[in-house]
Image 1 (tube, rainbow, N blue to C red):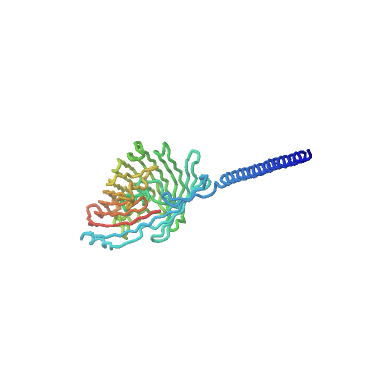
Image 2 (image 1 turned 90 degrees about the vertical axis):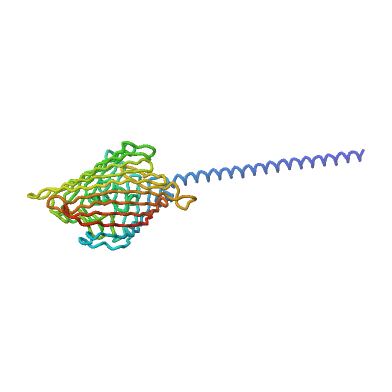
Length: 442
């Protein structure tokens, strides 16, 4: 009996130890589970905190810049309130001349040569989503101002407002950037376009940008740097354009426009002259010289059409000049007509009343790409003879071959035959020009 009692006591002690062990395991497990839950909860809390912090950072970094390239190097804030662009263009020209004996008897034959036609750099931008600016300078010959202005956009009623040095709103050819012209130089009739001056202008584009208008008041100024030091001379210039037919995002369109400019001379005289569609010639072969005048009215009529790869464009200008009492008024006129065709199927790009950048379907040296090839022809004319003013008359025929390697690089060849007369019936001979351009813009 004693042995049996001892056995039962030992068994009970073992049973108690097992129970204690099991209870211990359960307690430890509960503690471990609680500890793990605590760590997980802490991690979740930390993750949520990090997410909230990141969201806050995104919200508070709307003014961080995004840098990218789109027809120039651009810097935009995430909220689009601030935008900046840096860019420029380089145009290197080579020209060769050949004149007949009649021309040589009246002028010195231009010497063959080369030049940097344009070497420009600019910075432009948008501030607070309402203020725009541009500062563009040309270093090709001497440092000169080009487009240097401050503007306000999306204003009630007037639309947009600019003040500074920029082009007066007159002529489709003049307002189309030199980067996008079909020919190396603008036509001889461009002598009637006022060009860049210091002034103010209001302008806008409506009906999905198919109608544009602009009006401004300007003072005739130089460009290096522009400065006004007299009380004489001002221009009031107006232009309106419309695209009554516009299809396939501009692959088919009709453009019509009209411009008018009222001018008083800077001093007592006006002077109209032009080069023979080649900038390396130092001589103006048709030139009225300075003549006394009181005011001038310039009228410009413009039209253009795009039918896929084919394009036609033309302008006619009439200028009437009132002279001092006792002197008869004089009238001058000029114009041009040009046609072009893309052999590779592209079309000219049109926006807000002027033409813009051509983008090849396939860039040169990218796969089987050949770039874009364009051929063009132009007839242009200017008549600066009327009454006592015998500035001369010039009629030009120009042919062009353009190779767009990509949207920012272009090689150009132009042949220009200039037929020049002096006073009515006086032949000054012919000048043949062969010229090349290597162009890059960024």
